[in-house]
Amino acid sequence: MTPHQIELARHALGLRPTRLISHRNHFVAGPGHPDYGDWISMVVTGHAWRRENKHLLPGDVLFHLTRAGAEAALLPGDVLNPEDWP
Image (cartoon, rainbow, N blue to C red; front, side, top):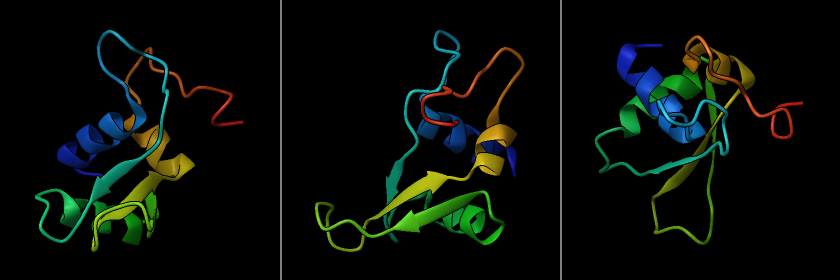
């Protein structure tokens, strides 16, 4: 994963300097979003998966990280919430 993709993955997990335990796993982007291409690349490499959602705007996609993608985004001290990642 590129450094920018790691930033996107950390955002999707809700990780930041003041929150070291993940509390979500999603990111919404569509073809016009500047990060859409990075998310598609993460899907291709197995770091994320995607699904359509009828509650989103037409064309928008809901992206989720795979365990491999989530683990690649962790920094020292970060933890994946065991309730979400058994």
